[in-house]
Amino acid sequence: MIVAAGSLSAADLQVTENEKAIVVTRGEIPVLTYHKAEVDPPEGADPVFKRSGFIHPLSAPSGEPVTGIHPKDHYHHLGLWHAWVKTEHGEDKPDFWNLKTKTGRVRYAKTISILKANAEDPAVGFVVEQEHVAYKGADKKETVVLRELLQVKVEFEGGENVVSYIVEQENVSHDTLVLPAYRYGGGLAYRAPHDWDKTNSDYLTSKGLDRSNSHQSRAKWVAMSGPTRKGEATMTVMIAPSNHDFPQRLRTWPASSNNGAIFFNVVPTQEKPWEIKSGEKIVMAYLITVADGKPDKEKIEQQWKMFAGEK
Image 1 (spheres, rainbow, N blue to C red):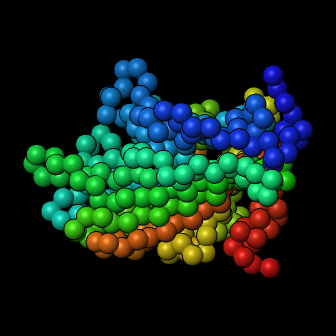
Image 2 (tube, rainbow, N blue to C red; image 1 turned 45 degrees about the horizontal axis):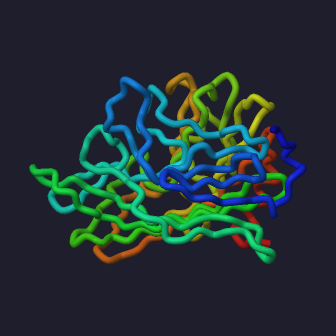
């Protein structure tokens, strides 16, 4: 059964949880799935690439997915996720992003709460605990370095899927986690469907930059658009002004990388190092909107101003 996106209201949002996932729908239309259980990579890939703690698919109002996972060029790319890459922790240098290094990973730990719609608030969502695990020393001792609360709240506003994505990380280890300046990692990461390439998709930043010139620029928001079976869709990431090093620097791929595939990363440490001391908490907040159709720069700018609390 296919239901037109405009025929359902925000009150139709539902959230369900099972042993493997937390799923948000609008009527029978998928909105997003968060994976509690590890998802295996494609057949023939190294099993090290299985992982939990990410969102896929994230869908447009039409129900069409705007994320992709386990692409052949980067098996560790997982829809909507986040992890630190270049780090120093005591005598070790765990990489929580590149699973093949076998020095670290991020995983689902437990569900804290499920937010269900009610008469006063039609939004739904969840709070989960995730662990950033380092494998330290010669014996690869498992050590939880960061204990994280990931808070996801979903609304349906103005015909768009709107997702609040807030990450609170606490260093629960005895050592400072040092984050040297590096070109990618941390923040929020996104991989588009595998058929989005240089011929049919692009980036648009708050400064009006695109695939050719947005890498290492700073932005308040970034929109990425490409084809679906029902037309086109736009996925926009809005960055909170309270985030470290705002407006934050970006990692985007040029046309020469993997045929112009869409990969995006907000990188709080691209220019300057950062550190999370033992017992310290940091918070990173984003608002994600997913719309059918091409990006509307003026509309996105107004949405960001509302998100940021500007008049």
